[in-house]
Image 1 (cartoon, rainbow, N blue to C red):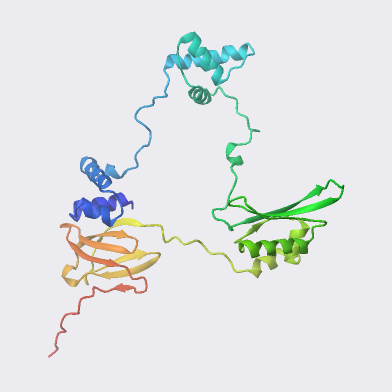
Image 2: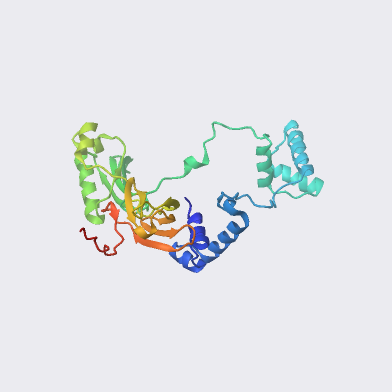
Length: 316
């Protein structure tokens, strides 16, 4: 259930002010006002997803211009000349006094199927470099061979922070071994702190640091990662229900069923539950009266009203 329905129910049915509802559910009062006005004008249709398509398209071209673009494309290509968007834009402006951007012409040519697809062309998204979000989240390491002016050969080992591309350690050695690589790593850790993870190739100097452990041994050797904390995700919904004979309503939260006490005086009453994570408001469906407000206690199956029990009946 969307937050929109929760907000509208709180204003229309419960009768709370728009400002109070906006503060309670963390939204702007202007959004609440627009939403309520839309609901009063359209009813349930106000909750349907709205198209984000603009009402007007300033870059749209006329049918005449579209025809000219198609004709120029074919004529130029047939003569063996360049028939790209920039060339077509030049001809439109100088021969037909029509000014259209090359980007608009390119989009039209693609929509009209006049651009031959290039399946071998590498997509632009593949050039976007992955980067760690925080310093020391991941270090990358590699080594290269380098010939000195004297003719001698040396090997350079580097450790680079993936987030900042900062070279944490760059050292030269006659020969790079597992022990040499381990020593450079320990020196970098001493200077900059330990990283959360490292990324290297499958070279022997890096594999030897794990004493050639099998995948099964490596998998079992360390604690396992767990799903991230999703406490920041907010759950909103409005539920229609009816209290039972004991004045109790049930609610399922995080896969567990809870019983919420309202009171026997409201037995069999139709109610609305306004739910925001563990914060719950129970209101009378007909009058909008607030019957109970609580924060769900996940350790208790039954959420008591907190009122002292009534006097017990005496048996003769």
